[in-house]
Length: 238
Image 1 (cartoon, rainbow, N blue to C red):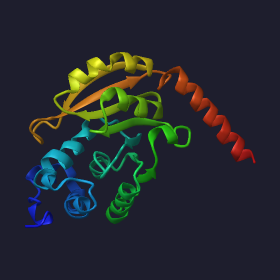
Image 2 (image 1 turned 120 degrees about the vertical axis):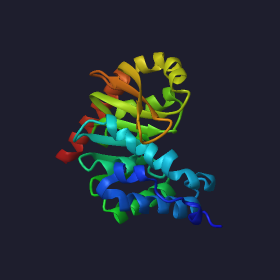
Image 3 (image 1 turned 60 degrees about the vertical axis):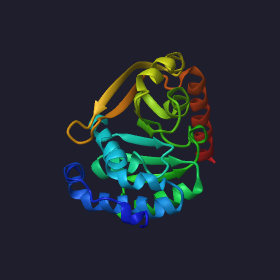
């Protein structure tokens, strides 16, 4: 039996969550089970639980993303949570940020195939694109790194008073406590743990929300942003 054949039928909850984009969600699941496994973007053991553990688990993040905002999905990998979020929310402008070429190639193919005109794929690391990409309202991430390290990548990409939404597991509360000092230095003003997807995923998805004040990333990153902005203006004048 091949990996593709192990993909189970979409559960009924998928129709409810993805609505008019249900067929596209099914196609994305098939791509993950086929090309995603073949290219090493997702493990073959994940195929039987792609819907519950991955697509639906990520799609319900939409419950806590504000309307009409710019989103950057840091370390997007195979497109989780960015692509399920894009399928559910066409009001968002989403950037899938990923440093590895084989992953960005896959993401570009998926975005084009599914006609996700509100999604842009960017190859690079978070620390490399600061000042090159416009600051966003929301940064999303899933299973990229421990929260303190993730925050050093994601928070500097935010605009003032933006928020980082990180999908985490059972360690969310512990990670949040251990990252408190680092988050404060990065300009975080409020943190919380949210549970989303009631009636859709069981257990519900756990989201760590980190809200920032007027200096996302702290003083050091504010200086770097200002320098990048000056450099950009100088280049445009040439």
